[in-house]
Image 1 (spheres, rainbow, N blue to C red):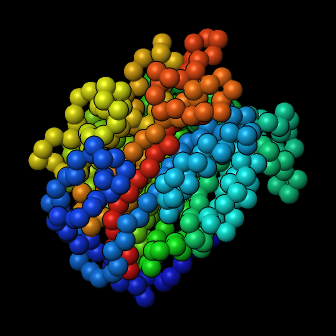
Image 2: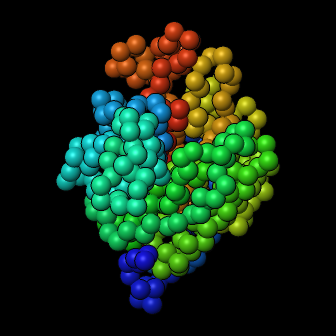
Length: 391
């Protein structure tokens, strides 16, 4: 049974108040070179307290890239400590890695976990057959990999939202995917330090793979629509909802319609039918010539766009340019102004063969014997900010 925190009858509608000329916006705090946009879209009127809300999402590739190990997690902790987000959304986290974060941040962040797979050998356990019976009490949790949500404060009621997509799972070639995944959005009502109001956070991982028949893309479209629809009740109840994760979908509507249920009608190009703003919503920022978009998608007079920097890390110089491959997203259900939105994608290459030093410059990255970059994950550590009004 899904648990809801406060009855909707006792809350008032949350609002967005337009603000022109903020002294300092979120873009300034993440990147000094990122220009502020001009807000033109008012939203619902109401009362509340204005706060800057921060979130980070990271598909840390804890199994495939790190085999369930915890020895490299200090690199992620360093980014968390430097940014200090209110909410942390992690994906592809092996259960022992979740326990590491939960112990490392005890008293600061409160963490929750939900499995994507419960019989996965990529996290270090060689035999997960004990997890395939009908009794979860005897599971080897080293075979679990899934999503994590962390809150700088305390997790409240858990809301694990089933997204569907378990049927007919196939890989890029259309072959059956074994073992199959279970897709739930891990959501909590949270009490955040310094945020005197109602907030809900969700960590998400949608279906992967791009088969020629579009089976996976159709499943992602349905999963995203299901999640957005389920969160309508929370937004109507006066909560600021923040959703972060690996959507395996590009933002631009002509490349994929998956995120139509999240982007608002005003988001250019193409708009959407959603109630959310994406943190990195323009073409600014990034390292010139590498992370910046080659063809601008966010063109004036648009102020909120389906755009942003790539969140995919190159595997090899031979693989080609990964720009425009933004598949990780941070969505805020409201913002006081478009100019307060900001996002920044940080690639995490290893500069040395011992994997002790992180660099964001691929030119400085170490390579293996096959010429592939050494990297912590095939995704970037993605940070987002928005000034919102909490009730």
